[in-house]
Image 1 (cartoon, rainbow, N blue to C red):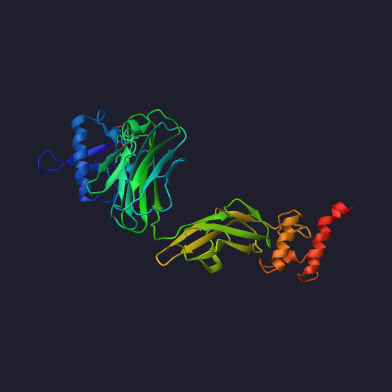
Image 2 (image 1 turned 135 degrees about the vertical axis):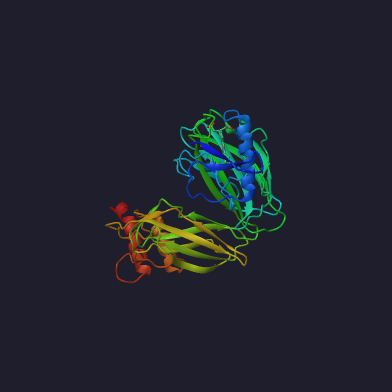
Length: 375
Ligand code: HEC
């Protein structure tokens, strides 16, 4: 694919940037148009081969509100981003403190590619306002550029394309959080996993965005289950999470399967709560998830597990109170917890099957536990 340049009648020597596909492309803001005019002039002046764009892409292509992406030029694989098998990943702390300087790692992966580029900007979430300050910590590989819109961007340098490096590349940048609480901050980034042929063709473009929570918002992380586990219906599990100290209450949600509406397992759990005993429901599913909602007066945070399975086991052993497939001291411990009211009762706690959960079940469980040794 190539570009056509149309001469406009006046003023003299003005060019208009027109993509070859004359489809109904979105209109770009005037500022971008004039930027592209300058770009195209430079393009014509220096010739197609010599134009030194790999010193860094033009600013304003991070897919932030009002911006396009690198696919506007690197469009061998279409105009959408993330079409390749690779991934653009941003790593950073979950939240900022006022004025805090934090490291952001921009990692781009795509097996087989061999030249790399990125651009990143930070905006106050749901606005077009720049947030905080992007800082260069590695001037050999990264640089700051200012866009026509006043936004600042951090991006690769020529050296920072890691020409010849295979499969992945990463850049380390820093960001200074604002001095006042501006609410959540969104990082927008695009990356080019290039083939290294020195042209804009044959390159895969990725885009991602990631939010940094403000100091006033609570944060939460689900520790168990994390996903990947297999549970049995009726099995008691202990949901466990961590949260910032400014969280004032929690809801726990259960998603029976992908795309299903959540069921509320518990709501308005008080501030110090970090765990909850939960009886896995009598369903069978390949992709259940749990989520914790942490609240305070200002906002909330959602921490979700990855999918886990609930599969009925055909024969549950008598005495296997916790349903883990083994008969051991943990079953006794759980049964004692249930009897003392520290854990909710489960069907399996009725070890002797007389329809009641009481001390008789403890005796029966002790028998079951000792049986093999008595024999
Ligand atoms: C306005 C057009 C344009 C935009 C937008 C653009 N590029 Fe490019 N890019 C080019 C051209 C032309 C080349 C080839 C010439 C050169 O390397 O300077 C190129 C080359 C590159 C290369 C080297 C490719 C290779 O295979 O050797 C990388 C890496 C790169 N760009 C990254 C990016 C990233 C990342 C973005 C988005 C943030 C981006 N570019 C946006 C025009 C563009």
